[in-house]
Amino acid sequence: MQLTRDGRLRWEVEWACDACGIAHDGGWGAAPAEVRGQILAQHGPCCVRLTGEENRGAAVMKALRRAFDLSVPQSQEAARRLKQSGHQGTYVEVRFLAELMRAEGIRYEVLPGACE
Image (cartoon, rainbow, N blue to C red):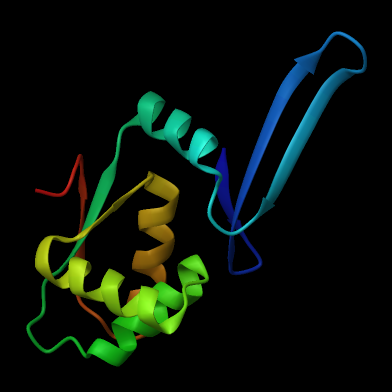
């Protein structure tokens, strides 16, 4: 699963272990590809798109960096993609990014399904 806690993105997994009972793992930030892939396969993607022409690039980059712990070059590329076609992710990732963008005064819409 993914969740937000204390203003940060977090992932957690839990499974039955024959040797020790219930085992779990987790961490802060983006979920590992395998965990994220399973969440997307089970629940499908969501898309967040910018709706305002006045959106400032620096504010968009700030929200992306905070949400996903991106470097400056990574956040520049992610902001370019977000402005062109939206950002696709899990429901929790998209809602967390949307919350951060709202705090920056960025107008957006969240849509179920893939960004097209």
